[in-house]
Image (cartoon, helix red, strand yellow):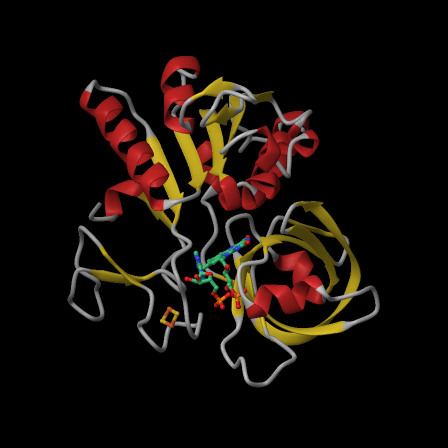
Length: 273
Ligand SMILES: Cc1cc2nc3c(=O)[nH]c(=O)nc-3n(C[C@H](O)[C@H](O)[C@H](O)COP(=O)(O)OP(=O)(O)OC[C@H]3O[C@@H](n4cnc5c(N)ncnc54)[C@H](O)[C@@H]3O)c2cc1C
Ligand code: FES
């Protein structure tokens, strides 16, 4: 069971993976309840930046969380300066995470685009471990499809090796197949029955369309998308992260869901694209 609490985490390490991309290792008791697809809110030490910064959980276990992030503004630049032994305030684990039970006995594709790749490492590892253990909830097969702009922008690659079949997509073909992750999935994974995805909105929209098309052709396919939109409070109170949904929310009676609490992961059929 995942629990949510605020605590002070200790920095166990930080390394730069590529230009502007950092991997931060935090010692925190939150690590042991983390689920793939969840995120944490990191608070800046500089009190002029009140809002926490949401970052997806890239890996978790043994009392440690790994977060992989790009420096885009003041908050993430401050995180990049953290050194082993420093402390950082953290709220987690937030959001629903992926429904990994849906993978049981089905062919699974785990896919991420750009900064959507990190949470897919934790997702792929847990699914792969279930396959190795012959767990009752294990998928029947696993394909990982990381998508990058080009070879220079790759920051997680070797880590996926050993977690099933790995097929890269890149805009210019400098790594893997030239094209989008949807192109690769369409052309090379005709057995996909469950897709777990995280990445930019156009990528998620295209995967949602692909799944819809397959369902139209009679296939039983489920596509889960993680919507990493802008957030403010991160805990469901400010309504700064609502997304239009196909069904009416039972409480508010409107076609809306809060990404930070009802999400960030949704079945693609729940979203108005
Ligand atoms: C659920 C969730 C999970 C996330 N996971 C990751 C992750 O694993 N790795 C990672 O690098 N980033 C992730 N992000 C994005 C990350 O939260 C932002 O990049 C960060 O908050 C920016 O803070 P900042 O102070 O550095 O920049 P700010 O000064 O707040 O913003 C600088 C620039 O970044 C843009 N920006 C801010 N927030 C976002 C956002 N959510 N998406 C896209 N652009 C944004 C702003 O428009 C602005 O141009 C995630 C966001 C969400 C909502
Ligand atoms: S970020 Fe405040 S309600 Fe989601």
